[in-house]
Image 1: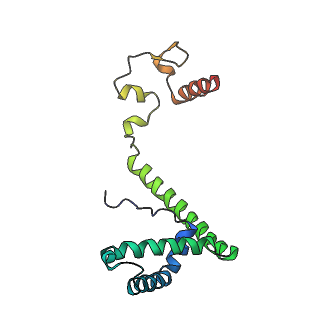
Image 2: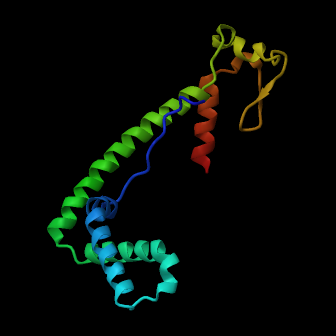
Image 3: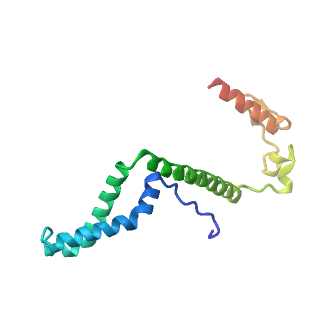
Length: 157
């Protein structure tokens, strides 16, 4: 099963914005954190939490910058989200078809005949009841009859 297609999740506009601005924001936040340690705003005892503090600062700054971004900037990233949505939908469709192909039952040549279908499963001597409760002779059992009965049952609901 190693050859099954993997579909990457769809990404939102903020994801693309964050990826484009991550390095710049990381640099600014690292300087801010270093300055806070240097001037004593943050105690040296919190030095082991530096990675946690840096990550928190980066996330807060990215969110703040995103919220204050101009409509044109946000529209640019919305276009990227739409393109990724199209990619995701097409990959998902391909993966879905692949999965359906893998799980589809193959019909043997014996099962391909209309009247032979019930007999190949040992049901040739059984009267098959219809959906309306009446018994039908086995010779009337075919796919069209089943489809008609299903449509009739669905219409009644």
